[in-house]
Image (cartoon, rainbow, N blue to C red; front, side):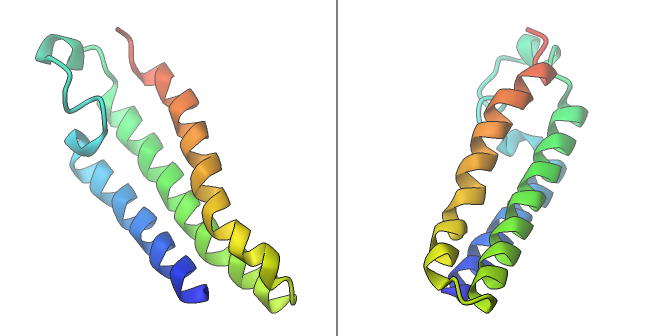
Length: 101
């Protein structure tokens, strides 16, 4: 179970750094016509996405490990997916401020 949390967290962290380097990986941005892409603050959006994905990855790695160490392994299983789900909702809401279309 801890290995699953580490694996998932590392994927999220890796995705965060990839999004910062290759902003076309951001869903929605890559399919926009060029005239709409001009109105997106891609530097701010890619930085925001990187920070959120890295935070989600770290939370996915650390939280289940801490809960398992405290003997709450049942709750640890829930906290493998919870940071990803909560972080995704947060990103969907907050990323709108970078789109000026």
